[in-house]
Image 1: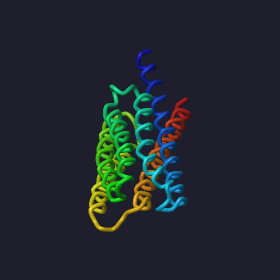
Image 2: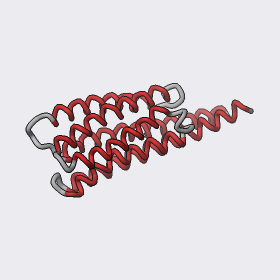
Image 3: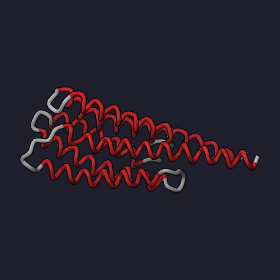
Length: 195
């Protein structure tokens, strides 16, 4: 009976994870489209730059709560705090320079990427598709280093610099969601053959 209950909890969390990855992919795609639509010098670009880490904070907090609580998901709880702080820092940096904004986003990409990597490694035993999240976390950290380097150059960056990062993130979330969906279909097909 206890084993059956654990199985139900795991299945529920896997369904949530699949939905979560699809939602994260959809938001990132919408953000990239909006970033291209508004143009690099628009005031709306600043709003989008503040919104991106704020969304990440909310998404991590909700995922942690749906996946057993903040106490069980410390990497996500910390990621939510880091992303929220980044959102405030971006808002302040926008008053100074886009180079500073990019540096702040670079530091965030490194920290949130490493925390995402930690979350994916922790989930690896329980859920499929975590290889894509491991790659995403690692690549985020590398991209963050590149952002910080770019921020130190004389060239003034724009929101376009961040769109590639967001697009790659969307692709990783979509791959993870599709992988979990296919895994679920295969599992159901096997059960149907056995039953």
